[in-house]
View 1 (cartoon, helix red, strand yellow):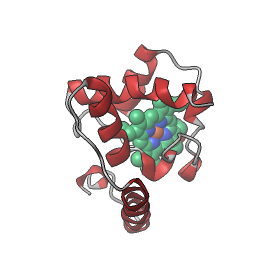
View 2 (cartoon, rainbow, N blue to C red):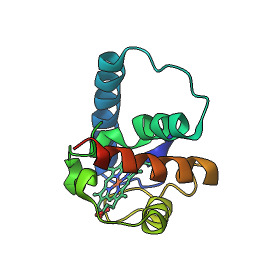
View 3 (spheres, rainbow, N blue to C red):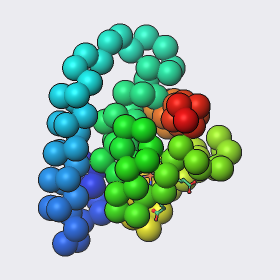
Length: 116
Ligand code: HEC
């Protein structure tokens, strides 16, 4: 849960328990992760690990004021930038994820849109 460690503050404990709770729900409901061979699988893996806590498995959870990613109009470049730097509530992931992981998860967000 080092993701939130650099954020600190009174929200930390609440965020951590939300994060752990949601991640376990998602893990339980998904059962198997399957193989992580290509870029899409990497993006999905990163998303399920770092993003579902606020955005939900389909991008629509909107917890902690997170926007609905399935209707986001951001370009690939804007998403990558947003994921690197974070926002007012969203953590910056540049320190946490590799460039490859950031690109992969930004690409995976396209799939959340197509599911609608
Ligand atoms: C702690 C909750 C939280 C986590 C974890 C989180 N986000 Fe966010 N995200 C937000 C919030 C809140 C916003 C709105 C901007 C802000 O206020 O920070 C946002 C905005 C975004 C946006 C911009 C969407 C738009 O159209 O405005 C994208 C893309 C995004 N997040 C992707 C991700 C990805 C990918 C991850 C995982 C690597 C992630 N987020 C993890 C809370 C979160």
